[in-house]
Image (cartoon, rainbow, N blue to C red; front, side, top):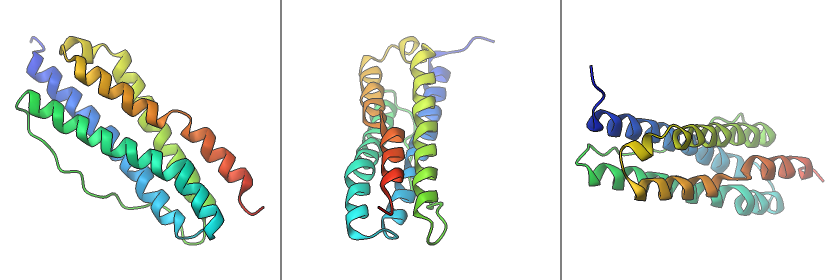
Length: 152
């Protein structure tokens, strides 16, 4: 059975939805973790992690919606994710968010390397995926730096 462009586009859209969900987990977890930190550490978390993840989440959602719209595919509403952080464990929250961002980045890299965005012939999508990936670049390292400085 032949793999059609419509099937390829839907597969790509489904993969992108999974990436948006991973970023959403990181965002929700960072938001909850922020509440557990003192003002100084919270401000650093917001600047170094939360804002870039929030921007990536918004950009990934927009990429999903625009791609679906260009090809008449069903769009999806992304609901806020449930944060996965234990009470009084900001370190665990940051680590969990960093892991979620890492998975999203790996999935984006695999999608970009798969040639699927090229096969569906969508230059805008390729550019948008690169923009989302750029927003996520370095976040796990920034999370590690923040973890090292917590409690100092």
